[in-house]
Length: 67
Image (cartoon, rainbow, N blue to C red; front, side):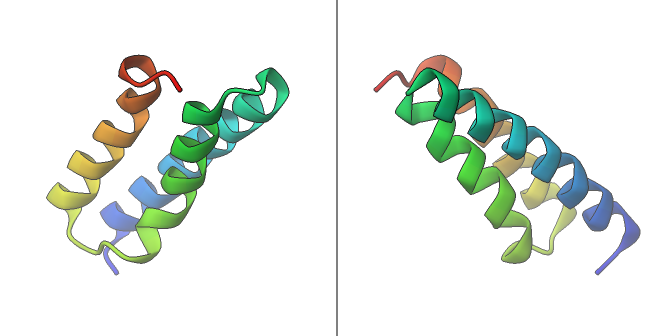
């Protein structure tokens, strides 16, 4: 694990926690799932470019998906 992937994981986890809390309080399913995914995906992805791409897609998902 490189320092860059560790930093990306910490940042993605922080954004994921914020999305999760927001989704739970507002009873919205898209931010709740995106928050869970943002907290979990750094455990499975070790490549920095893939980690950035997946994190950006998950962070943008609640703005485009509304269910």
